[in-house]
Image (cartoon, rainbow, N blue to C red; front, side):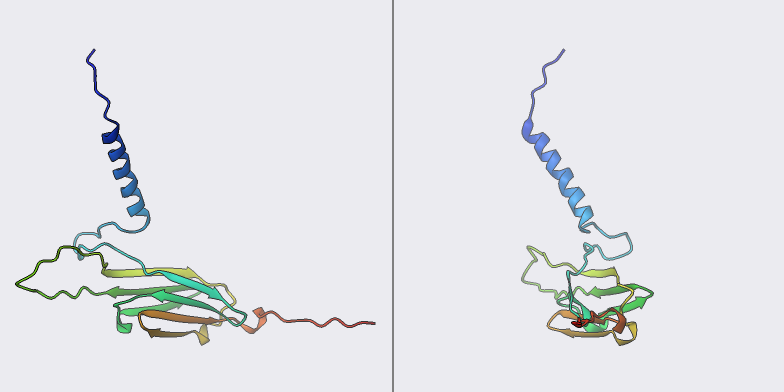
Length: 150
């Protein structure tokens, strides 16, 4: 029987590579299918707030024009989809050494409470933030009931 030298660092490196692959798959940083651009897929970050009158979605889409964003409401699902386009200038005298910004198509869907008045939904776009206001229906707003003393 041959003696095999144990190399703990190579095993840890292998474990780290596998964990990185799993996390990248979970967070959507995988390469897209052939036929599309070879940029990583991505999804914009979204903050969701609730007030007495509405649900408010704030979506980070810097570098994306409002023409490249589409909002759809179908039944109880709000879908935000669009594309952040890659704009690259060719320079003869310089090379790209690092690229951390992501580009490509995105799609996020959210199930809305059934109490949203879909006819009054408003959306605005300013400074890379898409703001979507989903007004609540009248029946859902909290109503204070006074108590009478006898």
